[in-house]
Amino acid sequence: LLSLTRAAGAGGMRQATRELVKAYIHGLDSAAVDDVFELLAWNQGIGYFSSEIGPSALFQAYKTIKNMEKQGRERGEICGVLKENSAKRTRTSGCDESFSH
Image (cartoon, rainbow, N blue to C red; front, side, top):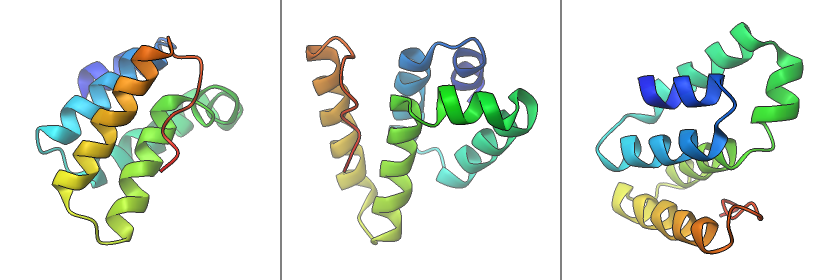
């Protein structure tokens, strides 16, 4: 989580996305990530959150996790989607927002 928040705070959304995916794959509870985004909005301001974090691949990955959990999907399936989307972003040099499951 520390690496995720440091990268996001510094504007490194691609690195923050990688950190989120790694942390989730290794068992991070999504409720902890809820707190991270709440604190980012609080500390950086809603304007920054809306313009920089909201449209980022980082937030898209987070929404993928939350939406799939809400649908009752298994963690393994969610991890597979995150890895697949991560690979797509790498192949396209980060030009598209692939986290739209």
